[in-house]
Image 1 (cartoon, rainbow, N blue to C red):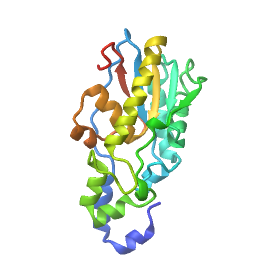
Image 2 (image 1 turned 45 degrees about the horizontal axis):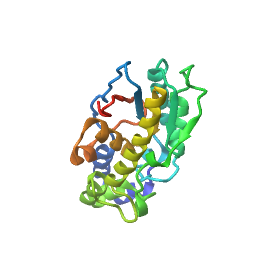
Image 3 (image 1 turned 135 degrees about the horizontal axis):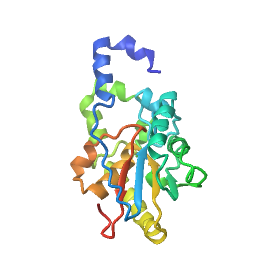
Image 4 (image 1 turned 60 degrees about the vertical axis):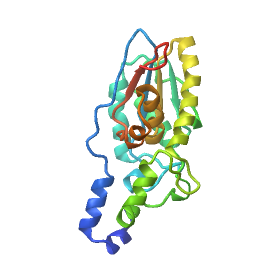
Length: 233
């Protein structure tokens, strides 16, 4: 629930405009390369959380899924139900763990697999901003909010830049490749909006600016990359 004090302080029209801006808009279809001749990496974002619903900076906070977030993960479960998956990974945050549990629940061959947790694919740390309102910042200083959220190298106070997140995700990918090539496993990974930027830059060859501007839907859909010998699709 959004803090009622916000509605007492700002005009409703301005609040509505800020909420519309911060809400996820039309997002392009996520790329999918599912070449059966190579191991396939499936990557998806967690479903909506309480912090998402309340427009709070979440970062390393353990914000749980909302009812809508559970439903979004259920949509993903239908899409992954018949995929051949041999290994499951999640960040060590509850929203990602619960999402992969739901997302794999209809896949008879994968739903009993152990979910390995790796902090390298956790959400970006927003440092001192964690738990504070993105909505209030959008109302009071939208330029600063945009800089914190969509600049590649800017670090929030005591937090991480997108560039730093991309580096730790790349380290995770390089290690994962060794397993995928050796075992010929398809792998599903549950992570976050900012850690997904690292996967997309790596596989799609995106520029820093493109990486920082990406929007990925909560739950519901997945990215797929065939892991070729040359690593990139």
